[in-house]
Image 1 (cartoon, one colour):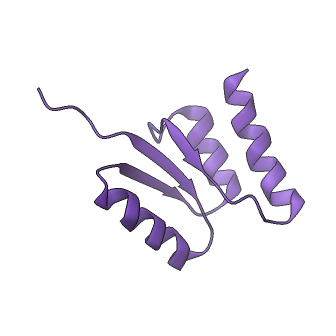
Image 2 (image 1 turned 45 degrees about the vertical axis):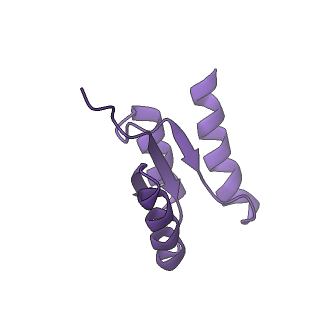
Image 3 (image 1 turned 90 degrees about the vertical axis):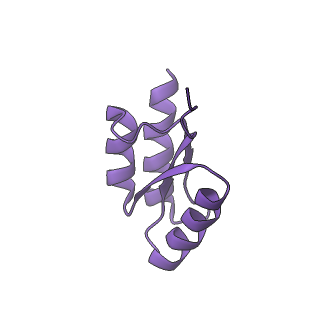
Length: 78
């Protein structure tokens, strides 16, 4: 039986950065889902629709964008 790839959710609104990061993780054998907005990322994480076991999102963004993503992610752990 073949083991499934570890799935990662990447939240990134800049297409070039998202493509670069996705390419790197895919080359290492990870399955990647990309969300282009914080709202989309939170929805995918909260519903489990992405199947992600790890979430990667920017930390150096305007507070309103990053804090909302982080708040949604922390809620998952509660």
